[in-house]
Length: 160
Image (tube, rainbow, N blue to C red; front, side, top):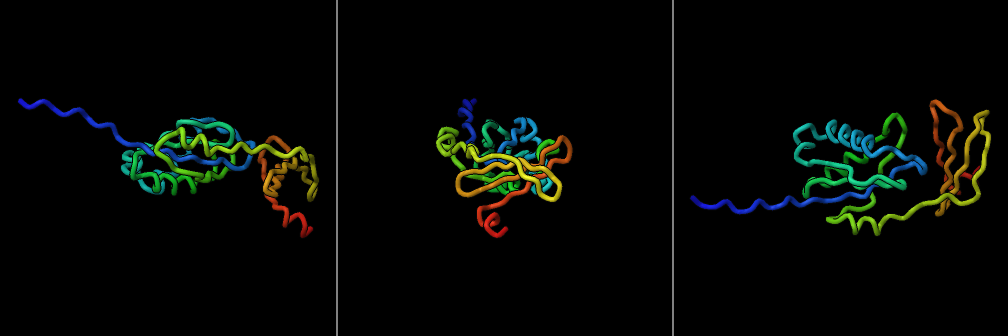
């Protein structure tokens, strides 16, 4: 009887994902469930089972998603269709794909709001103002329920 060759380890790919808007800190499990739901609706249960997506890191506005090599484009497509995580409106944007987590950690750029934050009232609604590098301004409605976000660029502000 011939001895069996040792099983080879499957190659993985890691996708660095930016979670928008800034300040949203979803739980790693909620991110995973949203990704699985989006991928299943796009590609079906069999394809998602073959891709084996998993969230290995979720912090600081970024997440790292692991999948099998060859399925990273399908998973990245599914990431772009995620619109909510645990009843909170978000967008997931793919930053980079790599074979190692170490390479992706070097790509993480923490975004901190500029100190020019404050409050503004538009149409009777009170919004918290967050200014970021690269001329980005976010307005987040203050309140407990049904929070909505408005996104402005410096050009939008100059037009008013």
